Image 1 (cartoon, protein in one colour):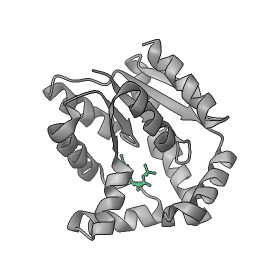
Image 2: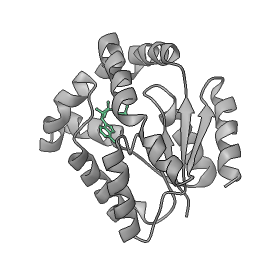
Image 3: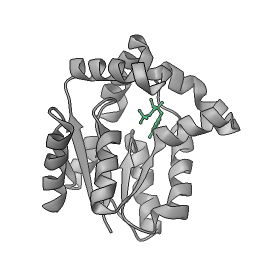
Image 4: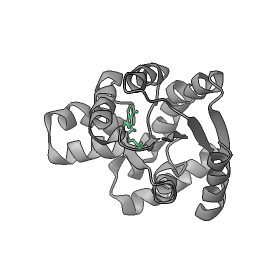
Length: 190
Ligand code: AMP
């Protein structure tokens, strides 16, 4: 069972690459961002409680996101390997995640981080905003805040996995297929 944390700043291409990876390696996929957006769309109490954070480009509270992951692990996460996309985003989430996985006899095998310079991220996200319908992609101030939050709270999570010798950085520039090939090389070497 292969459990991969697909990491990187907003706009790095995690969602796009996750789709290709799940096909090739027959993995389940969880994106905490997708789940949160679906809850907001439904107008559920959970959705209502996090709407403001997402609109501002801030992180949702750790406890809430942990709960989403716990539900996922209970339902389908323990049946096969997984790609965790957009999670964990804080060291506290990574610590709790390890405990949760351990209780299911599971572990993170590797964290692969897509590296993309900030200027390119902003351009990609603005472009995506014109078609994705995501309000947090349409507003440059919110995009910049998401990148700021990534640098301040999320980037440090690489240290957590580096200490466990599980972290690899991958160049996130180039065509979708180029980047996919780089990811596959890292995964196949595991
Ligand atoms: P994403 O689709 O991964 O870019 O996530 C969209 C938004 O959902 C983020 O800007 C956060 O507000 C929230 N979110 C997604 N995943 C997490 C997480 N692991 N921790 C905290 N907030 C999250």
